[in-house]
Image (tube, rainbow, N blue to C red; front, side, top):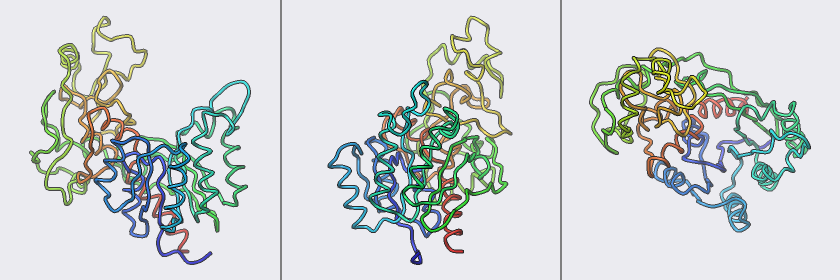
Length: 358
């Protein structure tokens, strides 16, 4: 293997850019090209990382695919990252594996790997990809990757083990031509919900602006780190809840949940985690794309009568306050909820670089 001084990345299915943003915290990694079909997400990516060639397009479009490959070769891309969607791996009955049309995007990712032959590529996905159908789909992926000539390490990483104030389990495959690179091991840093967002605890339902001043001093090392080099506060806007939602939230004590609502007000949801408040001195559960809705899960503020704001959710995902999200409320929630936490991406980058440099 030729000595690598810099990883030049292609970020596929990039979303708002959490994977790249985290990896850029290691100076040996730079994203050259990024692709996603979601325009609000690519707009957010471009505004936060203007040096990257960001393309809003569909990878299944032949012209877009050819453009990605052409530009990747021009920019000497030697690493690919991404989380290709796949819905077909949990199917019952006939096991089509990667041939299932619902896994077309996953296969497309691997075909681009085959075309560009990067030194390293990383795949992120839901953790059940490793166990569904008795591990059949996982084995199909491993066979395909090994056929391409790569060494593979895979497993489940939980973001909470890497200083992210959120329990978020995802499957990762780290694939390298020249050697086997193990998955990173947690660094022992634990950050609670309080440490992540207590300095933002002043908005009520319907309050807040896209851009505002900080109202409180930072109250933890994590908050100081998140606020570093950010003079203003962005995306701290509380959902304007309905009258009935506010009535329900007022009945739920601090850090408690649905069981405090009268039976007739508990709704049709089967899950006990709906209408629950976050707990200050615990790690947040997984942030998803509907964190703005109390009935969706455990995403109401620990004591204020509202769901968490996009900025609070971004903090729980480990995006620092300089990273600004663009689009309407629904688009921003999706960008945050679908992202790879930057602090986890940073640890993956560190592990890859340290292994390659040995």
